[in-house]
Structure formats: structure tokens, C-alpha cells
Amino acid sequence: MDKINHNTTIGAQLSGGQKAEFQRQKDLAALRQVAQTFESYFYELILKTSRKAELSEGLTNENKLFGEMLDRRFSELISQKNSSEISRSIINQFKKYI
Image (cartoon, rainbow, N blue to C red; front, side, top):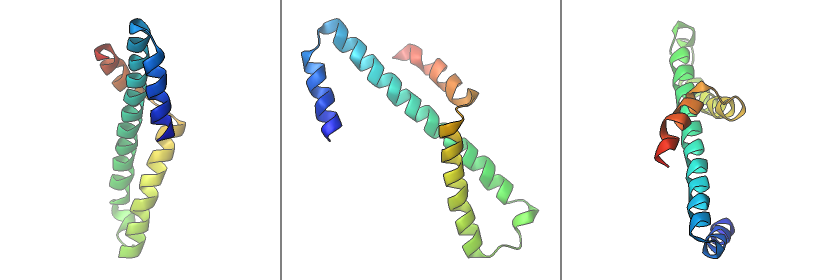
């Protein structure tokens, strides 16, 4: 909440061109976050599909649930640490609209 109020205060003190640039930077940051989230979902899908392979047939329901949670966390970590061409291409494709 404090961050939002701080950004609003900064935005009110800027001139027209500066406000536009400030808004553009905020939009680019939001686009980066969306691209990273999409990449995370993509990795999660890959891990989930891999887990459905024959190797996971002997797992109990509890182990499958834990595996899904682990896959989700791994996919988040992978996308945060190793930004790939997936998120870069999403950013490059959509930043022209900002």
C-alpha cells in the first residue's frame, strides 16, 4: 500500500512528458511480470507432463499432490532465475504497444 501511495505522489509531481515516461516504465515492469508468470506456467506444464509419464504410475495420491506443488515451485524458481527467450520474446512483441 505504501508503494502505491509513493508512486501516486511521484506521479503528481512530474510534468506531462515525465508522467508519460513514468507510466511507460510502470507498464514495462508489469509486462515483464506477466511474461515471467507465463514462462513459469509454461515450465509448470512441462514438469506436470513429465510427471504424468510412466515413471509416476506407482505414486500415491499424496505423492502426486506434493509433486504438483513441487513442480509449481520449481517452475517459479526457474522462470525467476533463468529468464529465457520465452519471456524476452513476449516482452519484445508487446512493448511496442506501451
